[in-house]
Length: 144
Image (cartoon, rainbow, N blue to C red; front, side, top):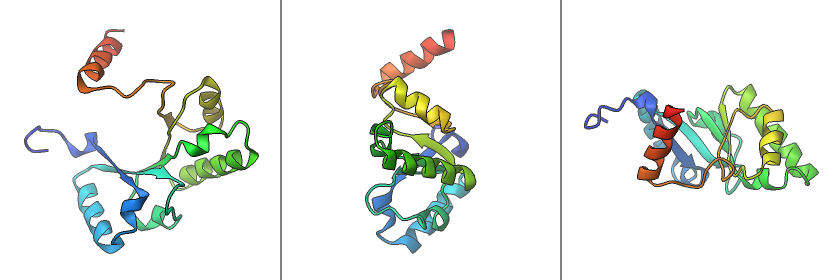
């Protein structure tokens, strides 16, 4: 950060749930030090793997990223829709930023918007981009 003059508040570190089960005491200490630098923390792929709701209060997260597997069939699976709605409410109630992964269709987007999901990512918006393509996209959007 010192080399690039980038401020911590402009960074967000995504952590997958599998990292959290290794040595939670040591990880909590490291995450606290990272947050002290102003860097925001996101729990990625929430709801998969070794997920535990206790992670949401044990670790200092700012953002909850809902795994794409809960988005994919939410329009046809009552159970997935109920779980998705519960995750959205949970994030709002805990004051966490919420990001839905795997938004691929307008239907996904509309459904998440109706649930008050404030942010999302997926192929509907863009395929993964390299640094050069990302820079060009940002310049194009700034020009508009």
